[in-house]
Length: 192
Image 1: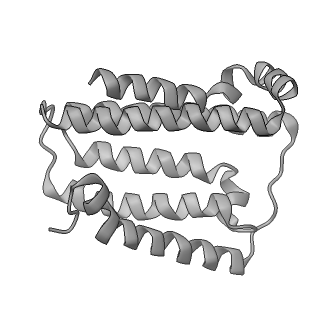
Image 2: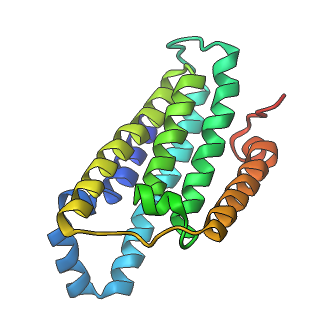
């Protein structure tokens, strides 16, 4: 569990610099240059992600049950995850209504993914992983929306084409992950 927690601290910590130390971040970009900063940021993120993966794998070998969720919550999680994939796609597809309305669909997607997984899994290591991501995403979303209001940020209006592409990309990625990648990467067959 120690590696999992260290990985979460590094990964979520580096992704929280814009929340807690935005001025420091700007000074580092000026001092190092944008590409060097992005390189260091990426290396730290990757190190945190590797620790999360290894730590989660180790924690799964010594499971501690916190609660036993009913099967229907696992099925509901499939819907939460589909919505999460669509929200993440909305962060990248230009001119969609989700991005226009939410402003930060990636964070909304992380919240949805983490919440659904918290409902569907009852082990301590699951609660640590998904609980940490949920808390971080909620906090980051609130701060980001507050910053948008303070700066008067308005996102481009959505279009039907942008919405259709967002839905298609999100659904295709969800399908690939749900029916194939989740089993091969995480070791859990979702629809067995």
